[in-house]
Amino acid sequence: MENKKIAVVLPCFNEAAVIANVVCDFKTVLPGATVYVIDNNSTDETADVARRAGAIVLHEALKGKGNAVRRAFCEIEADVYIMADGDGTYDHTRAAQLVRTMFDNHLDMVVATRHTESKDAYRRGHQWGNILFNAVLRFLFGEKFTDIFSGYRVFSRRFVKTFPALSCGFEIETELSVHAIQMGIPCREVPTVYFDRAAGTVSKLKTYRDGWRILLTMVKLMKHVRPMAMFAAIGGVLAGLSLLIGAPVIVYFLQTHTVPRIPSTVAAASLMILSAISFVTGIILDSITYASTVNKRLMYLSHRSPYELKQEAPVKGDGA
Image (cartoon, rainbow, N blue to C red; front, side):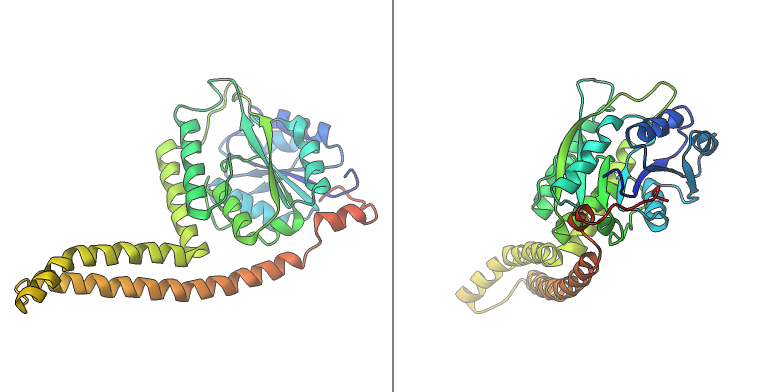
């Protein structure tokens, strides 16, 4: 592991108070790694402080964690990518273990799930929100993650270079999880300690705004990843409403051979037509999604796996 190119990616926005400590901590536990700070248009001295601490600073003018992660994944070349936050809330001492877990188990993503006894580590309602969104993800995509919002993850190169990174904000972790589910990528969760935020720092997460955006992202990803299931559900609801409205009309027609409720008849027929259109739309989009997934899978397989990296001769370099 020591001879692999390891990049530590720290998306940051106004973290000047703690970023130097975070950079030094990761450089201490991973001496051969290169630490990259993605300055997300900070208004304080985050970039200068990180540079003095020994990090390579990349700038991303578009605000949002997703934009910062996309810039990092585009520009950084490495064998292993460690993503964490620049606020010092994640346990840096577990970084080497997370990387070893990826190599030893031939994984492409290791998620460090957050556990804490402190009441101040999570803002009010965030822990319940995390549980709720994990349940929603499991319902929509059939995969069990216990902490989809963890920003502390380890990735293989082939994961990073085949991940589209379309999200702009804090919904990036949701997109990462859904991408792993869609591609059938081997991953594992490892419990780690989650620390309180350091004095002088504040969370950038807006509870209701970002929660709504994350929910919308899940719905969008459902449309892109499982369109048949989504449009079949919509078609089923429309068909049920059609039968609910049209059943009395049909019964009355069988008894009297007349159709006195013209508006109900039109509404029921229209809903049934929309239901059929929804089913057909789902079938078409499912075929497109299948072709897209095959192409992404082939691109993913074109990169070396963690197993191949583990078996090959040592690679020299600092991760730049």
